[in-house]
Amino acid sequence: MPIDYKAIFVRLTKRYGGATPESLESVLCPVLIPIRSLDKTIIRIKGQKHYRASFSIALDNSCEDLIAPGCTGKFVPQSYKDGGVWRELAKGRILTVNDFARIAEGEIYCGTGGKKPDVAKVLDVLSKDDYLELDQYGASAKVLSGLVEYSLVQVLKEDGYVVRRMPADMAQHIGGYAYFDFEVSKGGVTRRVEAKSLWGTNIKFARLIHSLSAKKGYPTSSCKFATQDFFAVSLFLRTGNIRDFAFARSVPVDVKPYGLPRAGKYPAHVNQNPTCEIGDGKWFGTLDEVWSLD
Image (cartoon, rainbow, N blue to C red):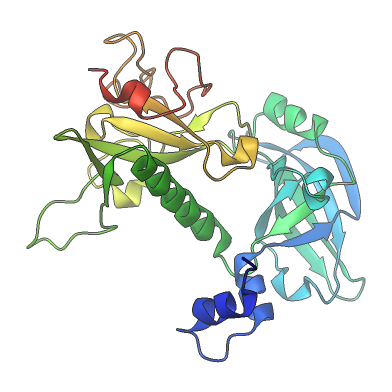
């Protein structure tokens, strides 16, 4: 049966009178900006133990309204623009904008604390043929998160689970805040599942963190072992498929051999960036494989 794209667009924009296809694309899709110049010389930022390299981009009608000192984006590979899998190579921050010369200059950095070896490793995979990706209206990360959660629910339901999504906030007169994303039930048993992602800068690792502002009383951004029974990590950044997940039991590795490492300073919390590889004895391709693990 042919797809009625006009009907889909009407449904997508029903709530938003006057929305055009161009407006929807601008909100959902980040813009890709060619790199004008790339200087991989690593310098130390004055007065700080952080290192960076530099880049420049040209200003034109497709991006000039997005560029201001302080705005940040991600460098993505040319292969992604040509139809390949999305991947974050490094991060970029605009430092200066020269409207007369129609050029903006910025710094290249990574999300590992700005150590020189880490920045050097990032620069090894970044080339002038790659692109700076800027989220035009701050929605793309939330859209990806929503698509991941939707896909996880569909995968679990297809495997026979009953799924209930927890509210993002909770009124005090109703009950306590749920520090996990989903209640998942099967065979009369209900468990808690937290949805997470891979670490964009190095997709070898999972990113088991949360916002401290959303988790009152937490001493660290690392997730607590006790607040969920399972982690479901989206493998989208590695495989390009929104339906691919890795599942792990939320228990310390010194308690169970299939568990995850503890955070060094906070043993009640999981390590923020454990390696994530299906088949390593800790991560599994389906929830069924870890459902009965105590």
